[in-house]
Length: 379
Ligand code: UD1
Image (cartoon, rainbow, N blue to C red; front, side, top):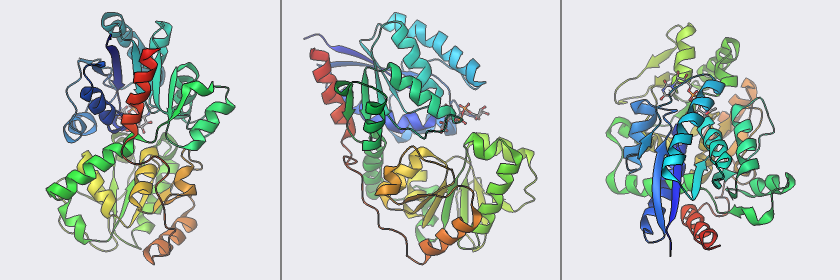
């Protein structure tokens, strides 16, 4: 039997935890698959990329396209140009992409134009908000993919409604949760990462905010900071900042209201807001697992908190992951300060809803994907 040559793409931080389990499963079946990993270099910092390869046990990519940052058009075009050369030299049977970042769309578009089939992991999610760059990336990628792997039933329904043939859609669960399950077990075995160990004994809220709609406009970011500062009156708050947020914060005078933490966290004091750099995967997982509440605008964190059963407030007007609200611990609250403070009050009184894990979020999504690839490869 000829081996299937699979070229998997990662580019930005959320891709790493979604692709790592798939790479592990591909490596378990060398008689069936030849696996090649490409990093577009959309994220390139130690803290945004390299540390995740270590924490998730991923091998070094065969090619790093080193595209770096840029406008949407420039970044997308540069990825396409460089990825085309890789496709021409590697001649894959299938390109696997994940999530909704610019690298996802750029690589899937490049592949289909070379008549190479594309598999999209985390397909079908829709916020129905076309001002989000990720929504455009999802729509384009799904429209041209051959294998569409969905994480929740809304994804499958959206694709069907958009006319995607049923045989292309595979409901497999969530590979990001596969990484979480594996790494939580590792944390349980090895204990807390030293830099965040002190969090195990505290009650605190954890925040991450980086969506362009929340941080790019100074007046929106000022609203966000005001909310976080008020939230800290309920319990101390750790604000883990993405480089985009950090850059926008530097342009605003936040007047020392946030205490910078650059090394290990020792003690956390009531009423205080702490500003932290991006954390490694295991450190963040530990911080999230032990948090009393999470305030975020990230997609993945809505899912991870649902699985962990940690109350989550999503500071956006919509979510493309409705299952996290329907059965999970999430509530979409926008930037409505009174509502957020009311929610925190309920959370800290122990009055939040009791979540359950969505169907097939069981740590085995990647192995289902590989089973689909095996069947597909035999056709
Ligand atoms: C990207 C994704 C977003 C995802 C986020 C997770 C798109 C359209 N957006 O947004 O969906 O939630 O990643 O992190 O693909 N920067 C660094 N170091 C890095 C990477 C970026 O400092 O390693 C800074 C640069 O100043 C850059 C800015 O972050 O201009 C934004 O990076 P970019 O890749 O354009 O988008 P993200 O905001 O990270």
